[in-house]
Length: 424
Image 1: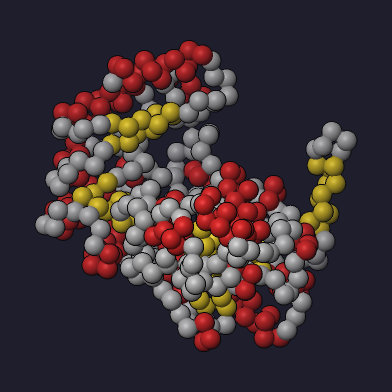
Image 2 (image 1 turned 120 degrees about the vertical axis):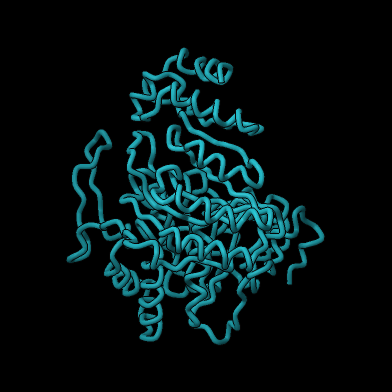
């Protein structure tokens, strides 16, 4: 029972009965899986990866995958004051009664939220404190590329793309569960899954200055972890019935991933390296997903997601067909993550047919010297030409992303940000 609802702000965050939510008969499933996003509901429900895993796991009749988000301060206080454990949204399963807990690790600042969620779920924080009677706690996402700071608290990590690995973990867990093994046996089996990293299978030794001297391998035949790569986006499962939140999310629109990976290699960009190689969805598949998803959701805006959508090869051919479909119902199209020099006037003309949703570019640095240093291959002439096209077509705003704190940065580089914005 969600007795706290009258006492918290944003209660629609915690209802768990949104459009397209999946709730299963828990007596007929073999694994109760908690998909944990260690941030507020409105942030987590904007994350496409969560929707993808929710869709993949719940397609398996043996699995009930339910969502868990970091509660806001008022709900946390209520839970602690009344000694009530944190539960899943859909069926109110206490977190400690789930078989597997999977954390989506997007950035380092969420690490404390991971610990707080475990604590609110009345689960021991350290992996070594948990046995086979506790949930298996795993993590994935971009930060699993450098998991060491949080490795004492999680049993293991999926390194790389998770669509295929997550189902292999389910198979391994169900097989282990039927045989009645202990936790150590389960973890040993999981190391056979490509892309699964078990921290306690390696023991580092250090020099006096803190640098690593050597790493001892504690499991025979388990030498290194190779990043998991999804080979084909076209054949990968993708949700066409995504959950539609009641509480307004950060990004309130239908998001379709059209490309994974990037070729540019900007030196500051983690994503450009960890999501290699570039893989694209065909325009036919993208159109099919958009068509089905709009019927199942009713969104009024579609967003094509990519690290650099202007580099999506079929974009110029897809847009006219897609906009013919969207404009009939007054549905807008947004293209986030635009790269200066990749958006032509014809593309601008197409996406402005319904309404102008805004343009966002990322020069990252305001001086050419600094952009050269970080390998951001754009110049000011391209930026100004693009801005002229944007404003000539009556766009209300142009958003620019810059970074402060780059190596070798001077005060002049920071002041140049304001000057460049003024000139634009």
